[in-house]
Length: 109
Image (cartoon, rainbow, N blue to C red; front, side, top):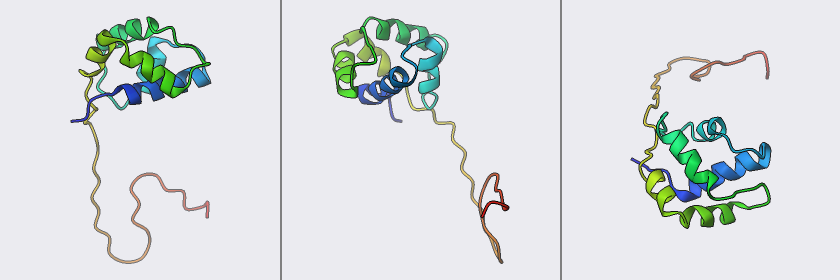
């Protein structure tokens, strides 16, 4: 099971700051949608991130350095595992046509 890393978190935070310039609990939760983050961890994560004094002028590496300098934040993100709710689709296809799972628009060719 993969756990959240400071590198992944810094990339998410950088993208949030770059596009909206405001760090909120909802933005963080949305950015980490592939991770098993719950209603208890999200506010704690937000509180620790708020202490880092991040702004839209920082690059990913600078954000990562600030994350790595916070022992409390590092301890918290190490508890967040990758969300393992994945869907695997196996298909066997015989004959003509395509074998695509999901919605397919056959009119845009």
